[in-house]
Image (cartoon, rainbow, N blue to C red; front, side, top):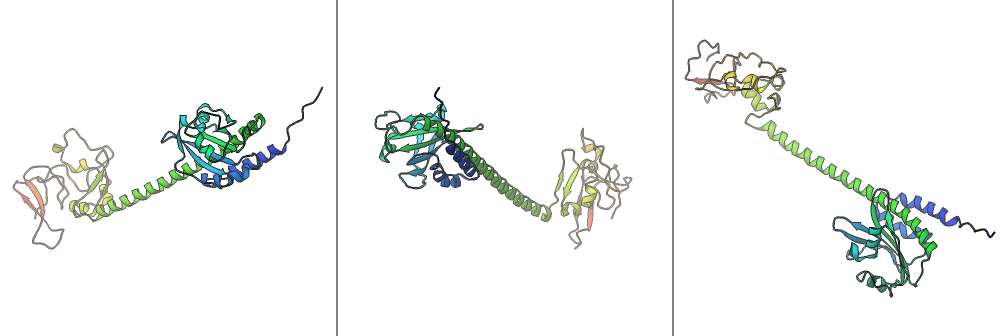
Length: 318
């Protein structure tokens, strides 16, 4: 019985080495820059291109890596609809496509003239696909008809599988880098926005207080602390409801974790909605207001203007 000679091991060893080299490239530009040189060790071609599916525009976008001895270039105008290019057919059907003579093939009338113009007579287009996604196609071509037989196509399919992994790695790295850059920009914008808000909050002449959904104080600015006579630390120990007279609370009640404002009595001393600056007793009766004395240079000089008789409420007077 006649034995079948085993396939030479050298091409497969070279494929392993090339796969190791191209898998280390982290960007498409770096990968494409080196791909043609390394693939010449494995395949016979004078035209090489990688065609990737552009999901945003639903087209096949061509990256020419070598053409008649010329180096890599990325023409912006070599873009075809999926059904108008050989690479689109390969991407859709996930099968190799071999054209033995472009002069005789009537398919793809938009794409074939470009190949003819650049001296291509036969070509082979192979799917670039990984376990994660379908990427596009790898095309190799030569100037003579019928250049690719079954054994060459079978080996080229193995090469395309390794190229697909390298392309997928490069795309994933670029996408991750783009997301990282976006997160960095968003973090910078958030930090700048917070700095602007903090500057307004701290320097505002009007009182500003931040509370949670239960009315507990989260932060107060200096103006608010000065108006009501508490420190920020003291504000954080009680809620806004603790400073509001019970007649004005409606159905709301102070939270169980809060406590009455330091020195405050729940009985009203007058009619304003803020505590008395001296005794800190909260008040809620109408007809009373507090104002700064226009005659005193001190911001702490408060005067009471009240048309009610507050005797018996225990409020200090001036």
